[in-house]
Image (cartoon, rainbow, N blue to C red; front, top):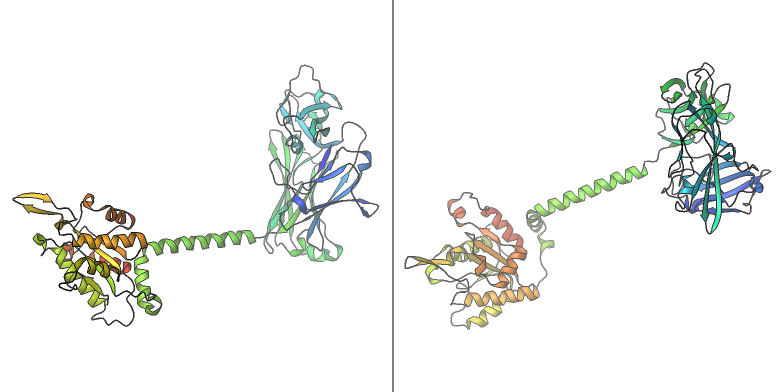
Length: 542
């Protein structure tokens, strides 16, 4: 069995396959023909199941570049598709001709790769790897042989007797049928540094280099040249261009150089082709690296392809947009109070709420305890709040004790008035939680026996929890407070939305304390209040 792959997709186990954008054909006598029997296209790869003498010939794969960035190319037609051409030579023997050459130094330990990972990756549990030497079962007198899980053959203490053609045979099962795949390597064993060995190309094999037009580029070619330097070794580059473009290409500086590199496994040659200015005529044309000596010749292929930065630009744009969105969201969260207030001030017509038939913007609820009737709580509710919200910002407040009618049914009036208000401001204060009695400090429950305040809170909280109307604004004065004395509804609302903090000392002394500034308190209170209806006259504006 044999597999032809169009380009580099799927070249390793786990890599993506070529997909449906690949078309295979067979050329015979300058005619394009269909695929012969015994072949099958699977995920863009051409499978020979099994190889037959009739499969000898030239095969071409054509692949669209819409989805894939190619690293192995041959030519590009007018439709923007890529083509690769393969020459398949079928031998009648069990072992194919060597696909590569390897040189081991005598007495060393080294590895021969099977290089059939596409086959081993299909079914490792049933695949069986067997190595042959000169197409006969592998045997070594006094030598150690080891084959690892990837099918690689390890030779310890290589000797001259180990030289020959090694074939990696893989027997495996596919779709219920038993198949055999084979690949051969020519192995040389040398200990004489003066022996000239056939060159073995390391890279490029058939690679693509992404370049920018007008920029410089350096192409590199690496080949194993034997055990020592020899004057008979040569490395050079050939650029294939149409004849009518010869003069144009000649104006491009192609500076080539090569050097020897000494490593444990011998001597390598590294050739560098320097291009001072990449022009369009150099794109998508074959550039050959040729390595030769008196024994043999090796050739590598490179292509220059214009770099596509669309994906990079898209990623940068998405990243910047995402970063900007995060900054805006974070800024909007931390500065939401100032933004909303600025919006209401700059666009009063747009910020106006839809008419809802409500008479008051807020109902102010606080505890009326005779012993603390002159406390800061009453002062705040009856004087400070109206001074700022009503006179400076045009809000309409209902404050019981100031706006209720004498002689009216209190519970009925409270129920009706709360439902005519857009907000319910509940003021909680530490000075109504405790008082001195006979020299002993006792705790008063927030739900006092004079329970008109408790009733108005119950009505407002019931509507707020069931209908979210009116919305509740909690104000805590001179905390911390003992929240265990609050009703379950108040504790729930405070847990969900928190409470605004008012510091009487800060207001009286006109200086900041450890508590939040009262200037910020007024911003937050106005933020939680509805927009001021248009047409209301203000006494002063700040």
